[in-house]
Image 1: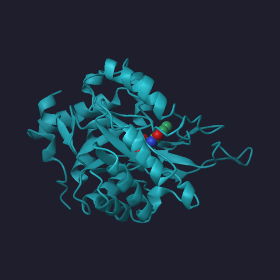
Image 2 (image 1 turned 30 degrees about the vertical axis):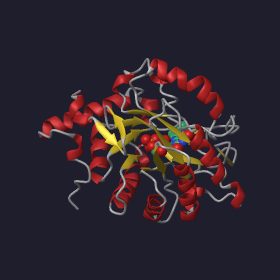
Image 3 (image 1 turned 135 degrees about the horizontal axis):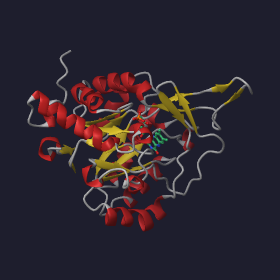
Length: 306
Ligand SMILES: Cc1cc2nc3c(=O)[nH]c(=O)nc-3n(C[C@H](O)[C@H](O)[C@H](O)COP(=O)(O)O)c2cc1C
């Protein structure tokens, strides 16, 4: 891999490659150290961290679907305090050269700010704000489906951190460009899209939903055309950089997202099929650049001829 050709600056976050491990599919990075060289990972994006430890949902949490999967993990994680005291030091010791982005969520605007302040420490290179969570003070409406709530979360986070703030958008909206514009206007340094699409599976023997939570989030190759369309729409709407994800399995998939307007990409569900995918996707991008006689990955960004 020609690391000069693919080194990427994403909203001020320096990465060796433009390919990150997507939140919730890459643990805290260390879980993958036997499968790939963490030095060749663009960035580790952590599992979603919350103010308190969460056990996650009960019952079945994962179901395979044609070309994809549904999950309803329910944000199982050790909570921010244990993350900061136990996990982050281990990550920095074992993967000192790998860019690390902390993904987090909360249930009130104020708690998003508290989380951002706690994560404003050395060893974290950027933060990714998951807004696909219910706002408990406003009847449980998901922050990421309400432009005013998404903007309020973004402002609260920005007020409490010096890190680059990536706001991760939900695709479960009528017009994702409205959400992207709302968080850009509220000060987001970048957007990530897409999170999972809400879906369900029914067991016809029992007439019950297969997943413990009834519904779950769809991801994997099945969602790629939707994710790509949304990245392209958002790229035509905002000026801040875009992290594109949704169904990326190969370098060729990643190149599509870059052409649509993403500056960097992340690999999610594919990590469960090929645990070295974050590196093979980067190699695929690099091979593509070489074959096309291009000297840097940035020459692809937003170059779609439409
Ligand atoms: C098992 C699983 C857990 C996930 N957990 C999180 C999470 O904690 N926070 C988050 O922002 N996104 C989470 N996601 C969403 C992914 O980061 C990604 O946005 C989505 O899966 C689309 O990418 P993909 O099709 O490559 O998987 C999760 C996805 C999966 C499959």
